[in-house]
Every structure is written in C-alpha cells, then in structure tokens.
Length: 219
Image (cartoon, rainbow, N blue to C red):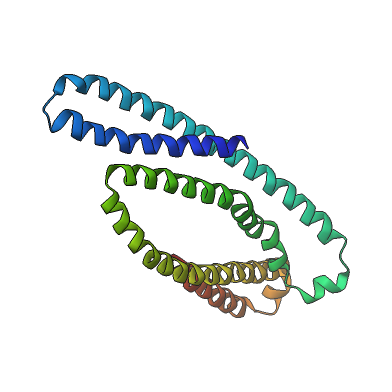
C-alpha cells in the first residue's frame, strides 16, 4: 500500500511539472513578467526535490519487497523440488530445474510485483496528464484520444511477440545451463573419452539459439 501511495505521489509530481511549464509560458515568458520567475523557479526546484525523494523511496521499497518475494519463492521451490521423485530428475534436464530457481523466479516477481506497480504508476500518471491536457487544450487532447487506439493496437501486437520471445529466451538459458552442468559434472568422463569437441558444439549451438532469442526479444 505504501508503495502505491509513493508511486502516485511521484506521478503527481510529474503532472505538477507539466503545469509549471504552462505557468512559465503563459504567466512569465509571454507577458514578459520576469519578476515572477524566481518564485516559479523555487517552486519547480522544490517539486523536483520532493518528487526525486519520493521516487527514490518508492524504488527502494519496491526493490526490497521484490527481493524478499524472490527470496521466499526460491526457498519454497527448492524445498518442493527436494520432495520430488527420482523419476522427475530423470525426465527433466537439470539446467531447466536450476533456471526455475534463478531467472524464472525473478520473472515471476517482475510480473506479480514490479509489473503491478508499474502498471498502476503508468495508469495513474496517464489519468493525471490527460486531465492536465484536457484543461490546457481540449482540442489537442481530443486528437490524442483519436490516435490512442492505433498505438494500443500496435503495442498489443508487439507485446505478444515480446512475450513469446522472452519465453524462448528463458528456455534457451535453461538449455545452456543443462549442457554446462552435464559437461562439468562429468568432466572426468568427457576428457577420458575425448568428448570435449562434441560438448563444445552442443554448447555453441545452445548459446547461439539463446542469442537469437534474446535479439528477437530486444527488437
């Protein structure tokens, strides 16, 4: 709850910045009443300092809560995996299981906690800025509303592609960990039978696929 309040205050500070720019143009620059500039500058600096402090507190709290969530989730997954049958470990690659404790746990945190806070922050800031825009120039606001569905459709299309690419990236990371774990855990046998080149080829293949998936997710 505290995190949401801090996030809302940070968004409010951003909206106040927009309002101060309007005051600067209409009340100081256009009529050339520069005597009001020092007071306006002081208000802007004060809002910037308060907004920065609130944003820092919000980010710190979000990071602390998120890391605590990941810590507890990893412990619970680790305890659960230890109770599984031996057949589970025979059917699953160890690298995939390890990735559940590392990158997947962080991905869950990003969705459940960080993603929720970011969504709330974005929506709250959108509402505030929309209100300010309507008050300042309703015609320009109307034009923005007409263009919004186009951007929403494009955003949804790219979001689906990025989600699929991210899933592929996590799978490839697990495959890399599996090959590395199998190679190093059985280093004696790999060297005894001269399988270094074979294992290297497997690793290079998985690393290349991971690179392709990461590039797809990025672009």
